[in-house]
Image 1: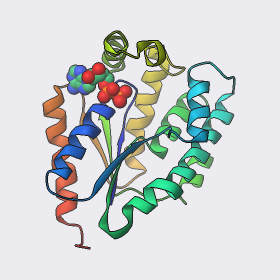
Image 2: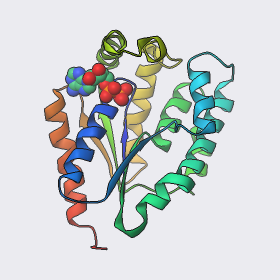
Image 3: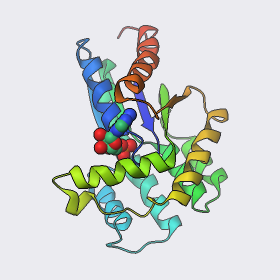
Amino acid sequence: MFFVLEGIDGSGKSTQIGLLYNHIRSKNMKVVMTHEPTNGAIGRMIKRILRGKEKADTLTLQMLFIADRADHIDKFISPNMKNGGIVLSDRYFYSTIAFGKATGLDDKWLSAIFSKFLMPNAVIFIDVDPKRAIERIEKRGIQSRLSKRFGQKERHDNLETLTKTRMEYLKLQKNYKNYFIVDGNRSIKEVSKDIIAIVDKILQHAPVV
Ligand code: ADP
């Protein structure tokens, strides 16, 4: 099975994926977690662009995300789903549609490409007010021991882009099945409770492998 967490930066995806992972592990199920962009060659190139170390336009950037994702499915997601394994991913193609559209790309061809991609069993969009997300990112930057590397602003971390991206994420619910929206403007525990309830419900109905 395959579950995806989505949201703008600072919405709590990496925090929540860790909690969900621990919850599934505690049930003795086979589970792995991963994220996009990946740590592979294409993912590393994407991170350089996002941090302004390399120049690329929006189209090039999103094409790299698509290639990174295809590679991710091939090398990590599909192999780990074999024999009933559960894969949790922090971001998937919904990010490309939401960020791509917010930065001026046509979503029709993006959606057409992704119609051939592996569909997750559920996507959970953690919906957070962009202003709050920016506050969290700034706080994280100060807290992080690696703030020099990760604390710097990324290309999409401004209020206008995050606001547009959030709107695009909300619109995606009508186009995709099993697309859940969770209110992320609450405590970590409350958000986690909702996410776990959604995933548990789907796992309960999954065929035993
Ligand atoms: P993302 O992976 O979506 O960028 P993170 O999980 O890294 O977001 O969260 C960004 C920052 O906000 C972290 O410092 C995290 O501890 C904090 N955070 C996450 N969820 C919440 C929450 N519900 N309430 C308050 N702070 C949160």
